[in-house]
Amino acid sequence: MALTPVDIHNKEFGRGFRGYDEDEVNEFLNQVIKEFEIIIREKKELEDKLSSMDERLGHFSTIEDTLHKSIVVAQEAAEEVKSNAQKEAKLIIREAEKNADRIVNEALSKARKIALEIEDLKKQSKVFRTRFKMLVEAQLDLLDNDDWDKLMEYDVDSTDMPVLKEISK
Image 1 (tube, one colour):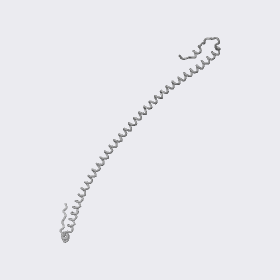
Image 2 (cartoon, helix red, strand yellow; image 1 turned 90 degrees about the horizontal axis):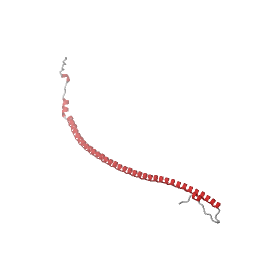
Image 3 (cartoon, one colour; image 1 turned 90 degrees about the vertical axis):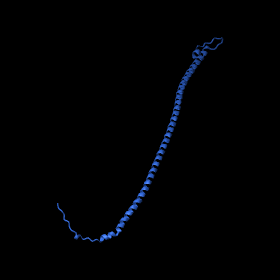
Image 4 (tube, one colour; image 1 turned 60 degrees about the vertical axis):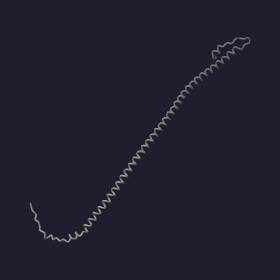
């Protein structure tokens, strides 16, 4: 059982034959009571302060736990975003490679088709050149022919020709 200032104040001592001076004892007890009351008050203040600090500590511990959890969640979210971005990048690259292969294949196909058309045009050009050359040579042969000279030998006098009368309506 704890000693209180009231217990000290109410304490009575038995009287003995040459006992202590009663006023001195009472004065000392009053001083002890005052000091004891101060100590009890300080103790109460410290307990209240400790309780307040414990509450704040609990509050800060809760905040710390929440921050730790938030950091973990943020890290997990960042990892997930990073992972998704990498997957999307791989898909984009794969799609780009497919498109590139398709474009290259189409270009090669068109190039082959154009090459075949060029070869065909070359053949047609040779055929045309040969035929044109033959036509020109045939025409030159006609010009070199003696028949032209014979035609030039014919002499036609236009004055000897009868005049046709025009019929009027």
